Image (tube, rainbow, N blue to C red; front, side):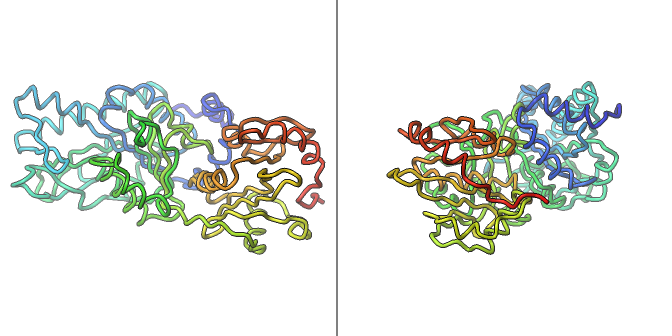
Length: 439
């Protein structure tokens, strides 16, 4: 693959996204994976058939930026057509394709054909991907009498995968794998992705779907799910059933075995970069999460530590003396928090004094989780942010309006808040800095 300069690599990504500061922050975070796997990307067979060019474009950008995903792909629709043509039918039991022995050569051939199509598309864009060699994934039979030649993952050769990643290629993993007796077995691609993630322990697990995320009862994409707080209600929702209910339970189980910083995203191919590299995302972000607490008393030591880490600057020693919080929202481990005050002489109007997310927790969706509580507790809100704050794109997406006052942006949301924000804009901009001036 032709070597690109850093400027060329950055240009490739920034051409797709506007939020330059956010992109650089996430790029630094994901690059910490070094030669390991920063993401496992699972691609459904329908998307492989319908959005292959868009998928190859995005994977080529990631590879040019020295970010190494492992791609696990399915071939469901392709297999449906191939097996139907051969007169082998499409019977399913318990969500699994019943696969007689005579179907396995067709399953293997169609899986290879689908993977090679992606490898060729990526190569045409300057990237490099290879199908993982036999033996990288070892399978074992589930229940041959019930499912035929359907298996589950029994072993993954982690050294083989990390070796491929170290050479700069994108490993492509399909759904046909050998067992210890040399028999080819058909494995559900979601199961393969789960086991690869448990083995490589990436920062991100991404499920690419045609819907662009998980849909609620009104067929709208849910932007984030904090399993610690949302899972019980999800399980009770009438609209969550069948395959999606099973997928959520499996995702919850997967995240329960991975570091707290790991997260799962569901999006479509065209939105992959925005979901990975911006605070607002473009799909459904699912994380194990933390309980969200609302308090009236500030834990000054922990909040100071968080705010200073988030802003990279030291708070004034008298900051907490001058702040009178109406309430504080924070995650249970104080990795994200919002400090909210009242606006004098304005009934029901609050001011967001500080909004902070630990740099190591960015990308986990904690900002969205805290913000949702903030939005509920404060239907009318105003706040200021320096013009160069990398969170401004997030603020803009969640605000009803903003204006500029010197080095500050004044944001607000809520019904009948526009005039109040205008009245208080000058006072907000004139407030003294909360951080010590650099020496």
